[in-house]
Length: 257
Ligand SMILES: *Cc1c(COP(=O)(O)O)cnc(C)c1O
Image 1: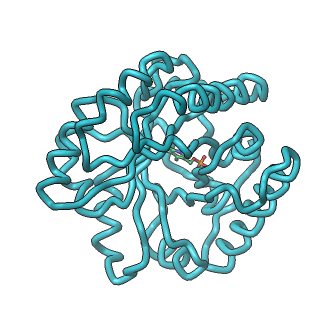
Image 2: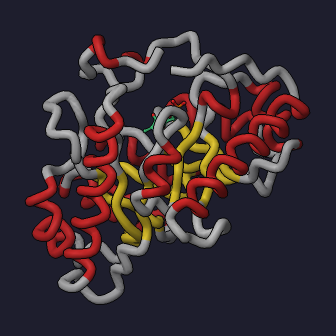
Image 3: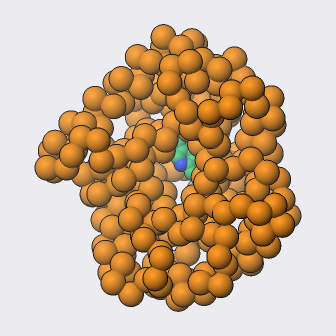
């Protein structure tokens, strides 16, 4: 893994964003995609408020967060930044849904019907909708959240009654491995699944988007069709809190940090 130096201020963050955007464009060109066809979602878990303000100054208008409590706290404290949107990208417990619907602009880790039901109920109460992505376990690792690929078709059908949820696509975390082929396979699996499901998806579910790729593998993900990449450390610097805090069940041997 590359070393990601800590971004201390808006200039550092601007520099890193430019770097990442450059690599994203190169990856697009390698596979003949338009260089503006991929959305960069900066991931700001563990990043403190001062550096979040710097990120906003550097032009970040949306931030991805893994944990709802951490995100909600940040959103409340930074509520003066009215054009800043918060995207939840981590596993959400049903008992935290009421917090999530208060501030999240999008949720990318939908992985159970119980959660969908509770989200829909709470969203109805507050009178709003929510774009969501279904998380798929493409690596086959037990420790990962997300639906097994063969359950996604029926899951999408079962989501039809939940009118507050706007399904926009699929999300995955690839295997955390230094073996490029294994990582690429995860991304490819998600794209092929999406292509296959598109034909049978319920009306109104676009399945346009594939949220896949992080600091260590976003270029591969783009080559395999990602339309959203979720990048934290390459923008903000290496995290000191291990990812096991965010992926509690994750196999420690495979951690990024
Ligand atoms: C932290 C996180 C990322 C970003 O990981 P980096 O290594 O910081 O790029 C992407 N997706 C999810 C779900 C995360 O929790």
